[in-house]
Image 1: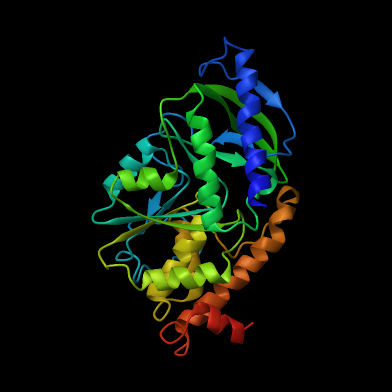
Image 2: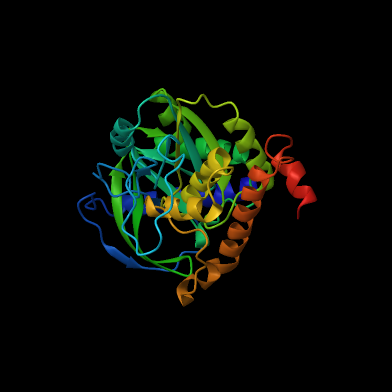
Length: 322
């Protein structure tokens, strides 16, 4: 699977490059609209060029968004030192870091291949954003390095901005040409800024695998209390909110209700993980959302169980509590 996925993405690099050769007048200032249906990974922009702050950026110090519901407690929240957002550029990451005092760990939750061209975030988007399903984090990162080595040999490359999606499929894009000055994987960019980096690849719209949850819990036990954890995915909503809720649970489950934790992370700027999609266009995500809700409920039980978090791993505990 690793080789076949890599070949598909190399094709996604090469085909736009040959298109570029026959369209020398195209530049970053002209973005023709394309009505398409994509079946192979498409190289896309992950953030608008020039954006100064990452989309959906928030921290545990933010005020709640207005709500007509009962306001959840902030107990344990202001000292949590957690942040989340959509995929950042080099520029928007540097701006976001000004809000975080102390050491910062970037927790990259993206399972899909991604990185940076001239500090601009790009990724390979396939139907449902599921192109690396079944791949290990190690394989994905090796694949990314190969892909970016290939991009670095080119003078310019075509990238698409997604304008419209339906049922997880891209329907409309705008194309632009990027002249290539430098390329980077996310781990390399983060390391260049002297930040910690951890990759936990999670499929878009899904919850994490049990082995990844176990590794995450063990990692949290080693994090110095003064550290900030900055979670991000592509859009800054599903996966980022999931892990911000998980971190809140690990720190506060013994004194804060699950509903308050889920609601307050939504009011900071995430999503309500207990709200199951009902729109026809989102029907394809419904079962994954149900599974994610059930996972969060079990994870809270694990954190509160005297025989859970403090005494056993998640994998061992969940095997007995399916």
